Amino acid sequence: MSALATRFTPRAWLLFATMCLLWGMPYLFIKEAVESLSPPAVVCIRTLGAALLLLPFALRAGVVRPALRAWRWVLVFGLLEMAGPFLLLGHAEQTLPSGLTGLLVATVPLFAAIIGFVGGDRGALSPVRIVGLAVGFIGVAAVVAGPGLAAGGGVPVLLASGEVLLVAVLYAIAPFVVATKLRGVPSLGSITMSLLFIGVGYLPFAFLTQHETPTLPSLLSVAALTVFCTAVAFLAFFALIAEVGPARAPLFTYVNPLVAIALGALVLAEPLHAGLIVGLPLVIAGCWLAATGGSVRIRRRPGEPPPVAPG
Image 1 (cartoon, rainbow, N blue to C red):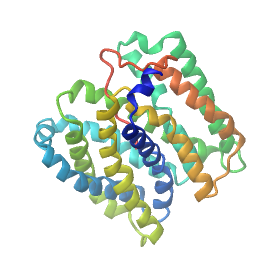
Image 2: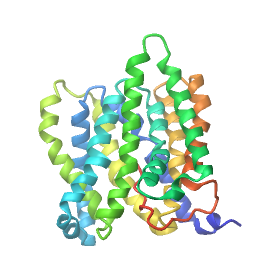
Image 3: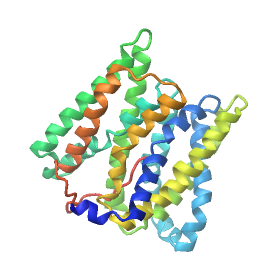
């Protein structure tokens, strides 16, 4: 039996499956939410609502005070992990299918490998990882080319795809901030206070940009996004880290694109174009090689940042 299997208890597999679903669903809910809610309004409701849901857990755990002492870097983390990505995703999904968005976000390990190398980790770009980067970006090109070359969709689709790839870059940078500037701050405290800071900061923009009455599907979608894909998902993520360790916990991110694409096709009837079918396995394989170097035994290298999975 492999080392990976010995670490995954029934509880761990349940948490793993939960995370595959909870962080595979946001793209569907974002797509529905921005039908009648402005992207800033979606960000505000999601972050402020999730902060209020997580705050009792953070207070009980005594992690709010340490986060407030490091409020500047908690805010920076929030800008990288929430303020920028959530807004860009909402804007991009006014153009892109939800499944395509979920797959492009899955390129985080590719950018994390490059950022790690630039930061001095020469092992981040070993020959196998370089192959992974090449395979992954070929997959991205195939995925974007499908709808991007469709009639009338070229420039808007390419620009929106660029927004999502920028989200992946921001998600890749955020853990390095945690590792270098928030090392002694509990994750629950950092995330709760980041959500609170960003939610309050987005309040005026939400009011200024929301010009139409939200529809019921949009309100239900943003509520699900807030409760399940943010508050509950972060609590489940912490539980998974405690169960299997920080190196193995983010493995579910390789399944998230499959969930996003399946939900987009089944619920929203999004087309499965040839570029998506060809690019999906290339992106996932490339991300796995770039993140692990092709090893089935996942070890956290010295100085490697702790996982902060996208949601």
